[in-house]
Length: 283
Ligand SMILES: Nc1ncnc2c1ncn2[C@@H]1O[C@H](COP(=O)(O)OP(=O)(O)O)[C@@H](O)[C@H]1O
Ligand SMILES: [Mg+2]
Image: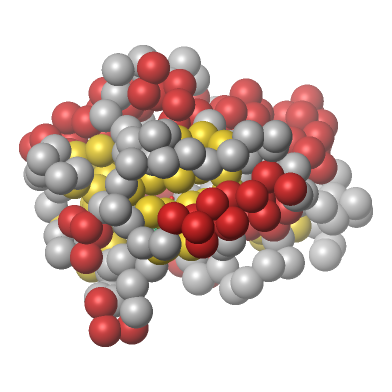
């Protein structure tokens, strides 16, 4: 890559899978008069001090290079304004943050945690259908859905044997009906929300993502969760992913503050909102 000296905004990507939002975001930045370019976080040729703001986006490979990624974030944030802030990335790249949210009284998917050296017990996860996934992951990678307790325990054991922590949850059936609702916040305000289809269903159960109005109870939960983030005022973007539990109340499945897809193409005003929020952080 060749960095132009005058570029004000780094749109931070990786070599992983195509970033379907990059062109939309860069076009919005250009329309807002911002000089921006896409750069890979692990490109040693990048001089981060050239940028007024570095916007973390499609850095999906952090899930298997987390220490390296966080070390980069620390170095970059010493010389540019990293969005979101490095302290946020440190906490948010490991889903054990859900345990902290639950401890703070937020409604979170019931979760049993299995650290290396531990085993999955029925008492800790007494649900008929289980989801087993690693605490550091994205895109449903290494995630298993099963009604077979032995298969669930074996997957958890495989994760812990590799030094990872496993999380085990009930399969939330609402994801197959209403779906998962992702509330996208830009510059602190709700931008838009998207209804998302189940990722652990067979092809027959899938449906396409679509824009939706969030319900009042979903908005309330999302606002509460974000209000509990110490760096709330510094968040350029945030996505709160909710699914309804058995009692119908929304629970947090993920609080995405690292590299969430923002569904920019689903709301015509969203790319402009992102550009404005970036500009405000350049000032
Ligand atoms: N407990 C669960 N119940 C139902 N579906 C789940 C559950 N956990 C994960 N999924 C499905 O798998 C997808 C990915 O899991 P998620 O926890 O969001 O991690 P990530 O998006 O980081 O891979 C979700 O969007 C959802 O479709
Ligand atoms: Mg998710």
